Length: 380
Image (cartoon, rainbow, N blue to C red; front, side):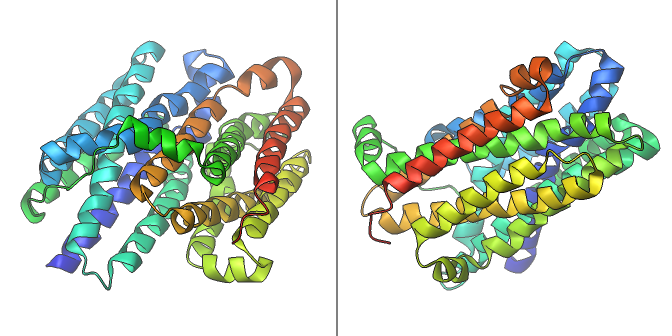
């Protein structure tokens, strides 16, 4: 029964990532059908991602007061209903507000699922269970984008969102029937502890580094469909969705972090290598063929996930106290960078073009590299 519960929660994790990233590969479709700009289309990702920047600090309070099961049952019911409404809506303003509303639910869902898996897993299996959870988030991120593009080409974008909405309502029913009542034990972060964590040099530089890296990552993933539509006469949403297959390299990286650190000779060197790979890949995106862009995406994702996976482990390794706060702040900087990266580069891309955007995000990545090099003297 416990194994079945964990599988149900993995399924719900993947479904949540479907909802989170489904709009990304079909930005050009929204642009043409709704008569909006590229930046306005990109805001569909920004609206749902922004609350994740504050999840690590605030959402634990909610989980302390209410049983995880109750939160998840209600959240998936509301996600399902809102997704179905989204599929029938023609107003851009309403569509954007629905995505913002879903963004308020998703942090509670992801935080609750991780807490639930941690509590129902044995001490010996919890690390592996969380590792699988991370792998599922990566796979869900890819599948949500790929299936969204595939369904859009065949049935139109509304059908996919309607189906996902129905599945979310079913997930709510399954959680109600098969999950246990568990309340999370959450340590309230104090302002003094947050300030202390930020004053620790390697923490602050890692936080700023991951802000820049996820800014760059989301900028690329959000705006590449628009550029692909320009250069590829045979552009399709499914083709754009399959471009994200490079995302799956993150699964291999997530389960081989120790080997990667050993190969590069330390965490800081591994993170440095990841950022350099990311910058190189960013410049390969200048190619005007789908094949080269596909290759660039694989390399780009490799660099991103090396940096992210090793940095998150490094934070936990170096934290001697307030580890939970360190993790919460890491997640907050990570998603805040992603939220800004999903729309701010549009103000570069629209007036100045693709080349200017690539130089801009390469510059952001270079600043992240500098932050890492500043702490290269810290013992790994």
